[in-house]
Length: 289
Image 1 (cartoon, rainbow, N blue to C red):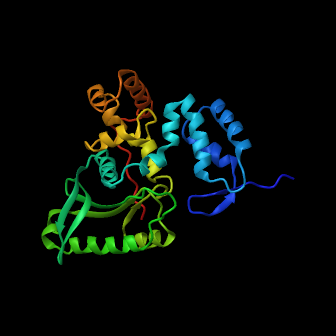
Image 2: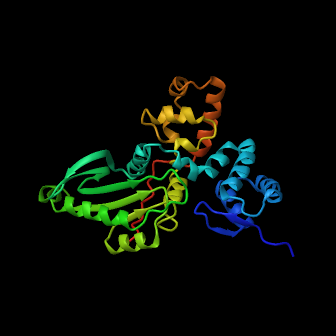
Image 3: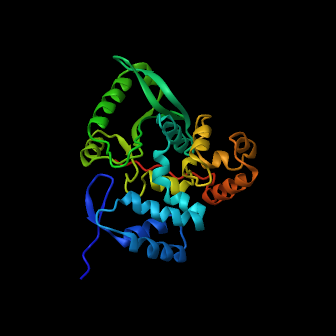
């Protein structure tokens, strides 16, 4: 019997290679059955003991990119979100866009006065008499989870803001959120739930995490586009663009970014496929409490 191939995850942990996991990730990227069959047949013979999941992703991505850029972009989504840096400010803008799609008016980098001291809040989202305070924790390295210390100190900051009677008088409903492109530890989730904090990560809440929200709303970050170079993505983000649907139809903007007419057509085609599900209807962010 052939011995199992063990792969190395981003955390350093080793686990048996699962062809079904790879198949599922390709299906999630909306690759067609023939593409999936071809990629699995290409990747499997190249596996070796200890191969990293990053290398497996690279092999599959390279082949998928040649046959379907939109599928490759979806497959690249997690890494694309990690490219919303290096400062992390584009990630804050990205989170704000999610709330804007829920009909909130958003503000980033706001200073709010607490009872004791003032606090810088990454995203403030308002809708009528409701306000949402969001602290964003951006990670540009895979395998680093957000642990309990983060919701602990953020909860203390939110409580200080709420203790300011002038602030509390303005709103009938106040919600605190912690948003990250990484994952939360089990203790961080337990503390957040206990303290009535909303947590949003790559895969939490289950079936309504960041990856699900992006797929359901079509709010893809421009960093997942395979038709743009890293330098072009950085140029666009430096001008406060973070979403594919903000840029893919804007030929003048793409031209100013130094993209040739031929490549602009590639960006437009890829962006159109990615955003085809985007509509004006809102898909509620589920409270994870």
